Length: 250
Image (cartoon, rainbow, N blue to C red):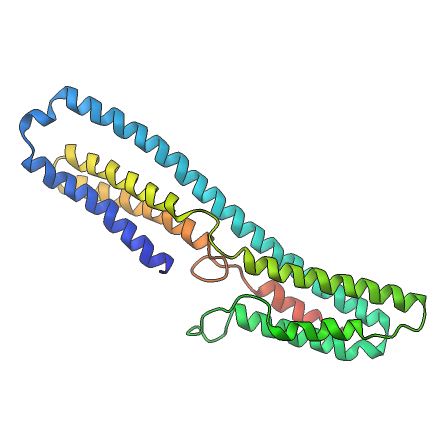
């Protein structure tokens, strides 16, 4: 389910709770609205609102941390690919084929994760062709100590690049249990029911509750979008990797 669809469901639950509270006010007996009852409900909902704010803050922090981690991994991947190309260039002209393979591999990876065809879903996980330049580096035959050192460095960089790509793959999932989101939405719905329960029926109140529901829904949408950094409205830009491609082979 997409983040936008989930957010619309959240909005329906939260704002629907406010409207349900208004309808509930009309059918409950009058003694349910005495001062003592109101005080107890306000205290209870204040406790729930505090817990909701804490959990929602944790969800945003967790999703933002996951997003920043993946973004830094993309930057790290870009830097390592450039350094690998420079290292192979220092080895000698016999690495030209390997450098071309590295460039082609990067082009494929960018197209797989950020496809030009918007109808095609992103594909995660390193492709099978990634091993080709890796094996080519292993097949190099150094002629002196300098080339042996460069080959060892290139081999290390290739290993780091493959590891980073796998990290990007395994870390792309949810950074928080979905149960957290269900609990937060349930608490928000209860809070908005209490708002509607004691709110007068007029356009100003309904507009205020609508704005509040949109605000908390936007917070939930932000959590969901940050948790899917390679797709959706808030996604990591491929600009760094595309800039890297322009530097390869120089």
